[in-house]
Image 1 (cartoon, helix red, strand yellow):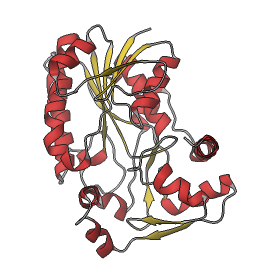
Image 2 (cartoon, rainbow, N blue to C red):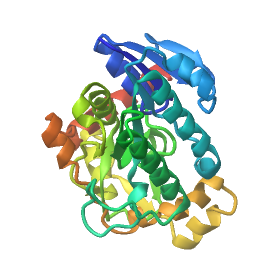
Image 3 (cartoon, rainbow, N blue to C red):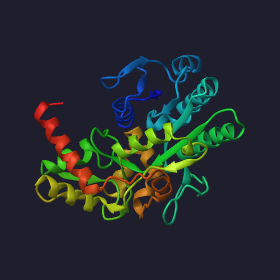
Length: 313
């Protein structure tokens, strides 16, 4: 079994830590506050501090970048953190496994594959594209071993407030029979990536050398509309028929005047205005991992929601 250092204990980092620890690995979780799931070693550190991150990663087989700066601060916060990750991986020999997203491609017509050009038009996408270019250049120069996994919008147990179809913004109000606002046309097909599948794919990438030296898409099911997800969720839960409505574009834009997060969402709105389709066949065929069927995922989500309601957590 190996030693794995995971930076970030949010909606992905916690799942990954539990997945690796459950497999018998020695797991260290690093956050600014020292938080993290039970059953692993937790360390408080500033990831931008290269010397400190290098110290923590000594002896590690893999170093996972699962952090996510505040949405409106990516241009300021990501560069020093990315440099720290790359430097720590180079000095310790740990494989650097970075969790990224599809922003790097910019607007795309048709299914997204890993061989698309990194043609991001927005600030956030360009930041992530540069991170990957720097990492893969270091890999090709023989300085470090890297891989990157890209998923679409997340859903699943313990999803954060930012998740479009997550617990707070989607699951909880729908199962309570409330109306749910949506910031684009909810009838447009969209790829949704299940959080436990993200953790599983990261664990594979950190332990299988076939993953190193390129980027991959996390196994993700067929694109379905938000209305379809809502209907299936409520059917699984035996809840009232869902009521999802589109927030008018002027209201969406106006919210950006008072909310930094909403302002930033304007940049990625294109992902929801027309079909957003992810092709993850490369990872699936190489590693034999299929995405969790959505109906199975929704059953798990409903069970987790009910347990949370019962315990008050």
